[in-house]
Image (cartoon, rainbow, N blue to C red; front, side, top):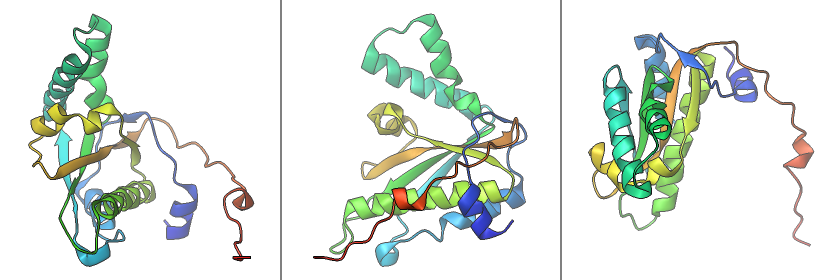
Length: 187
């Protein structure tokens, strides 16, 4: 697929089923992450692959975090929480390893990881793999970070769900460039 076509037409695919991306598709998707803008060449990103039964264990981590923050959950909310990682055959956890650097503040390092995620979901679209990126309260929950084995200087930037789209991707909306870009003259 042409790179500009992928950049102009990528959309999220919310309904994902087996199979997960093949080894070749994963390599292309993962290599795209390594080209993200990266001030200082710190390469602050890393990703955890969660698939198979590990997704159920992630659901248990989510449940413990939700129960700690909200107290006892209804049976329906418990089931929904446990099922969250089962939305796709492969879940990637995008993590920034924050480094103290005199010229690269932590926010730039987190933005670099976000750029890596964007590159991966665009590469997934180009490969015909469905993808979407979720954040939410669990991404910043300390129990989730601990359950995933993150170091104190690491932050979750989101969960990337990957799989086969259950239905063809919707058409990208046709947005007017003039709604988002304008000239500044300094006058």
